[in-house]
Image 1: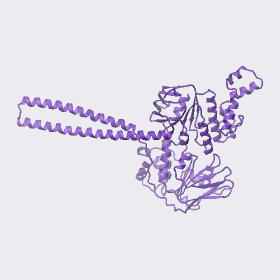
Image 2: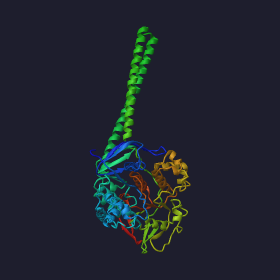
Image 3: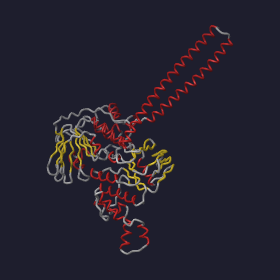
Image 4: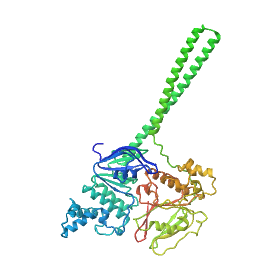
Length: 554
């Protein structure tokens, strides 16, 4: 890569407890827009913090063409902060206003530097993004999406002024609604300068000039957006799979030839013993023939052993090139949901009702802050659902779960067994083993059968007996999902609240695989349009700021 913005030289980073987050990573990022992808736990966020200088490599070095400006996944906001604080320009704004009031202290001029027009540029960028332009406005008056967009605007503003050469954004679209995401996409489309974005948002990754993937301690960089990278990777993986098949075939051939040679050597040795027994040759000639045969056999064995080892090494090398990313593959029981059966009712603030019936697949959408999660909780009865992550069938019989609300949207479960996965996957009992946690929803299924079913969710071997508290984020999500989908009797209505938040692309693929196998009714809250498009939705239900519901059939 010519003239990169960031270069990593054999970078290793270990946490104080000795856990290695990055191991001898080398690579580079260009001066355009780069989408950094990888599995959960691969070290993407750690890598950004290293580039930003917030962490120091254990070994190796990082070279930047200037300074880096880093925006973390979650903003920690002071309730008294202003928009200028969020933009990072408060010292300059204060100095400008002091100078305008007649204060000629040299410190003010030093603070301003070359940023005499910073207020005008800030207001112009905020306005272009559709954000409130008052620099003295309280951050508390902004929505979560507006606060994130304002912070990103500040990164762009500082980069355009030359105070930062490289911008680093970590999962910037997490928790943004559809409108805020579109505004962020527009910001990125017009971005000038080096930008590295960690994201699993496919729409955002399509706006990148290049794609980088951090995987198994290796950083791969590709010149193009994520879809082109995936297409290139598919070709590479097909070639790698073919190389593996060829290497395995060669190994089998070398092993077969080694066996055949051993049989010939054994036959020759038997013939030699027979000749000695029959005294066909004089003893001296027999000894010469035996020594020569033994030397020839030893040489041949060594040569064939070398070939087998070389073939085995080629197989090992080819295996490392082939990805073994597993996919969830489950054959779930049919929950038995007739086409016309009423399972739940969603009720808008204006009294309009939308019925969830039969094995329909529905999405509940709307801007941040309008109360989508609150609506779900009112429908599902939080005392029954939030504490356990699912509604046991004896609690979900007709008439036992309902809520009547005045003001705002609400509804009730009409009949049927309901499973609910909230945004935060913290509904699992931390001290229980994985097997015991899943058995709570399927107490009558034999442990051996549950182990087999958990394996289909990529939870295998010793992981089944580990305490929930020791699971990684990806493992925890799959166990929570398995706990719902493996419930016995099976849920007839599955409700998921922002299930793809903080999931990497591979985990999202696994979730889609699992939901594809589910044959009950599905109600999903999500801002991830690409994810919703893959679910084969029957309708989208929108909730507005007044609590009213509208339905669009697909």
